[in-house]
Image 1 (spheres, rainbow, N blue to C red):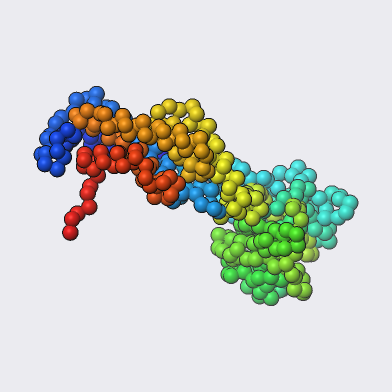
Image 2 (tube, helix red, strand yellow):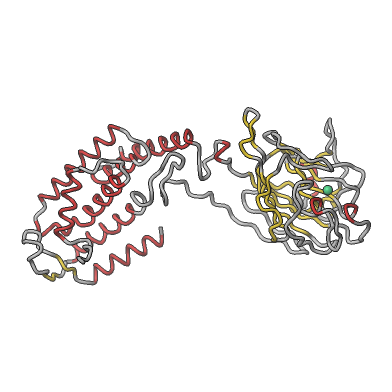
Length: 430
Ligand code: MG
C-alpha cells in the first residue's frame, strides 16, 4: 500500500504543480484545439484526491483474472487474507542455540523442566530416562525411545543434534538416532562424517525410502541442524489422496526435496502406501549411542486443499463455498456505503458469485451515474474524469470476463465521453 500511495502522490503532485490540457467538451472534439488552462487549487485538490481514491480502489478490484472453478480469488486479489505475521527467530551458532519464530511450539528449549513434555515410548506411558544436562536433551543408551506427550501432524520441524565427539563404531553403529515424525517416519540421525553406510539409511535419509541428495554434515561433536517440512499421507475411503511428503535441509543444505513417503519406510522391508492417523507424537530414537539434542520446535502447517484447506488449487465444492462467502462479505460492506463506492462493491461481489439483487442494484446505479455524467457541463467534465475512468474500468473488466453482458448502455455512454475527452491514448492509425 505504501508503494501504491507513493505512486498516487507522485501522480497527484504532477497534476498539482503542472498545467493540464483540457478539451472543450461542448466543442467538436476532433476539430477543437486544445486549450491550456491553469487550475485553481481547490479543483486540483479535488482531482488529486479523486486520483488517490481511484488508484486505491482500482488496484483492489477489476484487475487480475477473476476467480474460477478451483480458485476462489482473482489474481492479485486484495480480498485474499494477508499472511499471518510471524516474528522470525535467530540462527544458532555452535556455541549457542538460536531462538524460534514467534509462533513456534517449543518441544525442548534447554530448560530442565521441559523433560515433562516427553515420556518413554512405552504403554502405559512412563517417565523417560533420557537426561537434560547443560541445556541439552541426551539419549541414555538402553533407555528406549522418547516421545512427546503432545501429538501433531503436518509441521515445519526444527531439530539440532550432535553425535558423540569420541568416534566409536562405523556405518549404522556410529552416532545413530532418529527423528520419527508422528512416530511413523524416520528422518535418520547418524554420524556420517567420513563414515559411509547404505545411502537410504544415511543422515537425513527417509529411512528405507530415499537417500539424502547430499551429505553436508559437520564433524562429530558439532551441532547439526535439521529443518524439516512434513506432510502426512491422506487417505479417504481407502484411496490415497496424497502420499505425504518430507523436505529436509541439513545445515542449510537441501537433502530431501518433497520426497513422497511411500508408506513411511522402515528397516529391511519395502513399505507400501498406507493411511496415517490424524496426529502422532514426535519420537527420538535410542539406537545405543548417546546422541544429544537441543532447540527442538515446530510450527503447525495449514491444511492442504485436498484436506479442506485454502491453499492454492482448491476443490470445486470448497471454491464455490469460499466464493459465496467472499461475495457475501462484499455485499455486506456495500450495504454500508453510498453512491459509486456502493455500486462498485456490488459489481465486485459479482466476480465471486452472481446475485440478482446485487446485479440489478449495481446496473441501476451505473445507468443513473452515466445519465448524470452526460448532463455535466462540458467545462466541468474534467472534474469527473477519475470517477468515469474508474467506473468504465470496472465495466470493461466485467464484460471482458463475461460477468456482465457487453450491451450495457452506461458503458457505451461512458466510453463515448472518454473518447471525446481523449482521456486515453488512441491506437495509432497505420
Ligand atoms: Mg536411526
